[in-house]
Length: 456
Image (cartoon, rainbow, N blue to C red):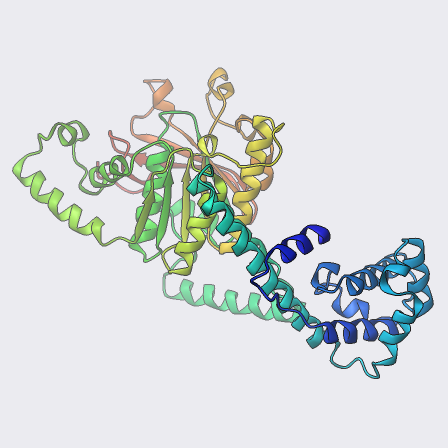
């Protein structure tokens, strides 16, 4: 890796890559004279941060001595370099002695190390820009692949800049927990609910609303209404002021819009699709169009989209304040771009759910990932889905914070109550599980609580 970076740097003759050999030497001197100093900067520095080859070798030897459990000192570092066959490459023991002779204090070690890390990041940006330019000039490369490869490079660089960003003292976390509790108490006293709501009160009371960082699996067999149920959540969230992004890998954006309009006006779906609504219904349709037009919902209908692309688009919208909830319809159609060509479909699904969970955490938004269930549930007498019916990978259950499963008994048995469905909370990391009934209309576009008078 080091050699490759140096070759790239050498080839870029028009660039004077940012570096500071004096600061590199000062940092190494501090690490050599203060035996425990390496612990202060172990999360900041790697050998790649050092632009000078000799300095990179010295830092590597310091790290190796520390990892061996020994206290870092000059003699051990010299011995380690000799055992690695690198002592002559740096100029012998004299170079180590020179590094220590020029340093008296270690008080600025962390600041100097962070400065070197900034220079390293600047070099990485230049090298990545060079790679992106070369890929863009190569007409055999797909432009879309180049775009997302470039985004991935920049995201990797950005992730290296998060030193200390994900760590917090327990005292700080406890205060944050108390602050969140007080907010929930205030909402409760005002009759408000916390989190992003689904539109089904009993479900919201069970889940305490959807929260940032959660991966929610919404699973069902075909024709159970999982897309319609997800759209109901999207509409509810958007009406409460939560910008929602829907990635529709199966249906077109217009088809989703049709469903939301039918749901909003409770129109006859057949009459709507035939263009046979009454004059009054057409007036209601115009009002629905105006009303839905104001909702902060973004739809991406790219078929065959990769999970990495979904993440990049969502991050961009999040930065613009247009993403507080992500809905992906559906898991089995999402592609995973992996360097491992031998991945089975189960491994690809597992990689997708892990990536989706990571995306939920990094964006701090709920991610609802729709999924198909296997036929096993239809082979049982009661047809009710269970966790083992999740199709293709046990990692779906493992990575999910919440697993919701939809079931409509009347679909399989005409003697069952028409218009009644069940959402099974099969997994709930922060609360209870169980079955919750709901009402739906004939077109399966509107959902309400079971205990309130059905408006359909």
